[in-house]
Amino acid sequence: IDFNEYLLAVAAASQGDLDDRLDVAFDIIDQQQQQQQQSWATKSVLQESPTGKLNKKQFVEAYKRFYPGAKADTYCQLAFSVFDANNDGTIDFNEYLLAVAAASQGDLDDRLDVAFDICDTSDDGQINQKELATMITAAYDLRGETDRKGDHDPKKRAAEIISRLDIGGDKKLSKAEFITG
Image 1 (cartoon, rainbow, N blue to C red):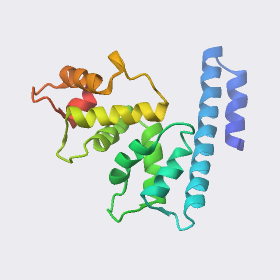
Image 2: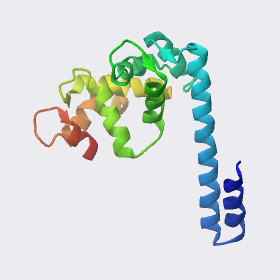
Image 3: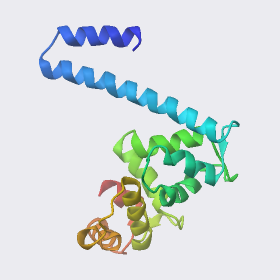
Image 4: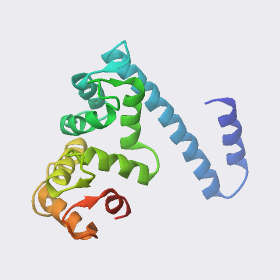
């Protein structure tokens, strides 16, 4: 904890109502966790590749460290092409941090924007049922979700989501429909 965080913590502990003090304390904890995650991400990339560039296989291995025990392969395959911004077959350190942050931090609309780009594997600016089902499957894999029957069936969920959010009636989702839905 740095000096500013210390001062903030002292002020939070001695002033205001309990809810305000708890909010400040949790904010400090969140900041520390994000800093630790970024430090860990840096070490992860440098372990995989001292040059700071990761090919697709290295990206999958590095990303799996954020989801131990889960299957990150499908998500990583989808995400790699989105985060390889310059299409050179590698993800540099900045692109890697963007990939990690996109999945776990930031404004909801920003995360949905990135999720849309990952889902839209055809790059046509729309997500069809097959693309959405693939992404739902990848999300289940990341979370370790094994129940994929009934309401949890990725194809069924994709169909339900599209039918609810598809304002245009074309059985696909535009980025705007996806984000605002």
